[in-house]
Structures are given as structure tokens and as C-alpha cells.
Length: 495
Image 1 (cartoon, rainbow, N blue to C red):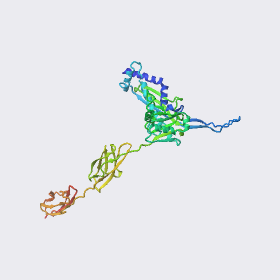
Image 2: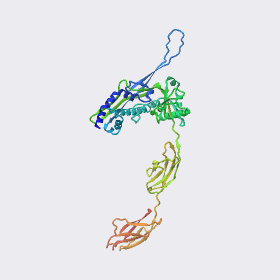
Image 3: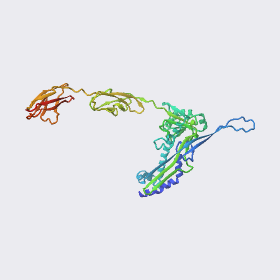
């Protein structure tokens, strides 16, 4: 294995150095969209697009005098700003052995060198191509996405211009119909200025090609060896271009190709591609650096198409309403069925959050309440559909009862007993028929004990000492259903 690592160390920098110009041009100019744009090299950060527009005026040709026209030559100047971008990472050869590198050993067993560097650079360039393609369209310097915030893309530039032509698509429109609307919206001046193009996402392009086959009654005579990514719209000179930069955005973009500018450097050789072997750490340091930016010369020659939001699917929800809960703390489950078979969501209003919560597991909603010590209370919980692109809800009233009124205990509230030892019995009745319990609650009143049988309380005392003062104790009578009563027991003084 050590021999393989030595080959990697010696061959990787050589490969990159020999192919530096090819790699740089691939990074800077390798995207699909870039091939349809006017490259403007020599830009470090900002530069002006100088677009000369000549309008010759017809004059009366009789006579010999030279009479130059007034005006007719217009210089359009718009600023193009590029972002400086770099990609840096490390490669540890040991992590490749037994994985990526082992695969390459097998397919290059007859070669003296171990050119895995070509495969790594190819993969790196392919990923840069894809990310740069997206940035050309979706770039936004205010974005949180590091892949998109290096420069503003064509969609943002068009959105910031009042002159951009906007087209809206109906949800029922086919890909063919959408592209046709884009072409019809192009100004005549754009159609006369050079080849026009409609840029679409790859999923739209796929649908367009399938519809093209059907409209041609299956007498398709297009490419057979590989899937095309560009196609002339039948009956026009407008090319339809598939780009992953617009995929899943719902957007299309049309203009003439010479209206789109791609800024970079190249001339000043500011681009870098380096692979450096760090002998100390035993890793390769890979660095690719360049700058990119886009702009249009005439925003009024740009058409941007957008698909309207689909009409939401209406969903009905079936389930219990209202939901009645007891005064005590606890939980209660209810099942709610959405007409589309999807799961549901439950939203508790902020005003009830202190005592009520709702948790969802699929279609089961668990209502949980804290104990209620006051008046009855209620809240409206909204049960809604969790299905994407769907609307529908059911408002469920959740009622929590007030605690039941405490029962009353009737019977003697005070009792006088003799200074001698003995017992006194008293019968007590509860308004709800519940049993009572009795307990001496006065601290230190060990002279008095109580017992209960069939709601008859027996008060048992010890004798008073001679000349001892009168003494009292409190006995608490309670019921399991919340009733309470205090009985005062007084024992006469000792003689």
C-alpha cells in the first residue's frame, strides 16, 4: 500500500499542472447556460457592458451634399458585478485506499501511473458546473445559501427591473403551451436581434419532449443515442434549453442570446487551480478559485414566466366535537379522519395554553388538561390537514368541567366533656352520603383521640389533673369527596 501512496504523491500535482488551462476554462465557461451567453472576460470585480446600438435613418438621396443624421447611435452601459469564488478541501490518501482508489487500481492495472487525480478533478468540476449553473439563475447576494450568495443571478436581476416582461401560466397548461406563451411574449426586436432561447427546468424540458413526440403522431425523428438537452421549438427559430438552474423553480426565462452577458476574468490570469502535497500532515490541499457574474443589456427584451400556485385541495375532517373533560388533571384521546387519508394537525389557542395542550400521532389527537380549581372553562382547538397543498379544518370545542360542589357535614360543631376520663359519641351526616374521617389537628392535644364507625365519631379523653385549667382541641372531619367540618372539643378544668 505504501507504494500506491507514493505514486499518488508524485502524479497528482503533475496532472493538474499539465491540464491547468483546460481545468480553468472548464470551471469558468463549462456550464450549459454560459454557452448561450456573451462572455465578457477581463473583469476583476465590476465592469460596464458596452453595447452599441446603431439606428440608420433613411434620407433623401438626391444631391451631392453630405448630411450626417443626428443621433442614431446609442451606447448602452450596464454594470456587471462578479463574485470571487473559491473551493478548497483536503484529500487524505489513506481514506481512498480500499474504496475509490482500489476501484481505479483495477481498471488501470496495466498503467504505470495511478491517475486517480483525473477522476477526483472531473468529479469536482462536475459539481462546480452544477452549482454555478444554479447560481447563474438563482444567485442572490442576500441569500443564506453559500452556493448562491456570491453574485446576483438572472432571475433576481430580472425581478428588479420594471421593464421585464412577465408571463403567468395556468396550472392546466402543458409544457408545450407554457413555452409557446414565452415565445409569443418575446418582442419583435428580440426576435430580430439574433437567436432567441427559452430556458426551462429539466423536468419541464422532459415533458416538452414527450409532448413533442405525441404532437408528431409518434413519427419522432430526434436524437436516438442520448437524451437531448436543447431543441428548436417547431415552426420557430427559438431554441428551448434545459438547465438544472431552473429546475423546480416554476420559472422560465426567454430572450435573445446576445442579450445575456457572463462576466469573468481569464485575461488577467486571476483564476487558480492548485493541488499541493502537505508532507507534514500527509494530505493534498486542493484549491480552485475564479470569479463569475451575469447581466443583461436590455431588460425590456427579457421574458420571465411563472407558474401560479396550484389551487389547494379541499379536505374535510370528521371527528368528535365538542370534547368534554373532567375537572381533574388528565388526558383524553380522539381520532380525526381526513378525507384525503392524511394525518392531521392540532392547534391550541394561546389563551388556553396554560391549562390545555394537544399532541398528535397520525390521526389521534391527545387532549391534556391541568386540574381545574375554578369555574368551568373551554377552548376551541383547530384540527387541520397536514397534507401538503391541501386546505381544510374542523374547530373542536374542548370543555373542562368545574370541580363538583363540596358536600356538607351536619352534626355538632362543639363538644364539652367532663374532666374525668371517658368517651362521648356523636353522629354526623354528609349531604352526598359519603363516609367521613376524623383527626385531631391541635398540636400537643395527646389527651384526646378520635375514631369513626358508620359516621359516628367517638371522642375519647384522659382525666384532668387536680387544679388543671380547662383545655381545648380541634378535630377535623373530612370526606373523600371534598367535604370538611371542624369540631371544637372542650374539657372542663380539674378539681
